[in-house]
Image 1 (spheres, rainbow, N blue to C red):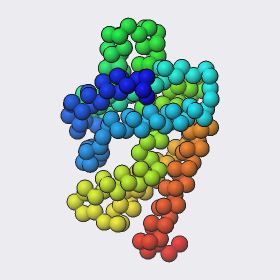
Image 2 (image 1 turned 90 degrees about the vertical axis):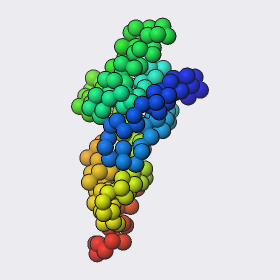
Image 3 (image 1 turned 120 degrees about the horizontal axis):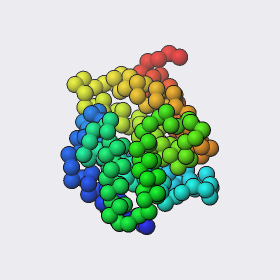
Image 4 (image 1 turned 30 degrees about the horizontal axis):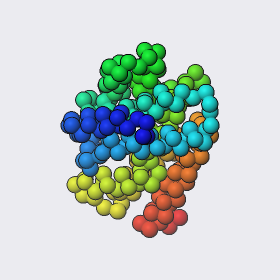
Length: 211
């Protein structure tokens, strides 16, 4: 992170200087911190690549793409944030004289990071797979449970039961449906999945499930 300190600061300034209510409406209700998410995704990216040990990875491009992947939320909504993020990143890199080919690849990673169709395609660059995995590892597992409870607490009539339903509808369903690609990603994902499934089992029992 130290080598890219100026990039982090640039992204942080943009995300905090614009309307932070852009993006997911549920997360907006709790004042979700998009910059803090970016830092956590970067950390997940480092964890994955440290275990992956793939010398062919373009780590510089992957790191920059991770830093900028959600900055577009500052100026656009959920659907267009990836394109906005790539545009902001391209402008930043061009003004600093980065190689045009590298810029194109970095912006490709950013533009496609929310395109789940790319996740399982054999032609998808490993850098994009890692970025997508790192992005999905945040706000899931234990953090997903907390987020569900936090968001539901802002509803009109929150209860233990409504929190349970929220967890089932979002974190549980998402983690049940998704499978990861890289070996490190799969390991992290399965650890989180195990935690969520066991938590939900015990929580439902506490609420009166006799199973």
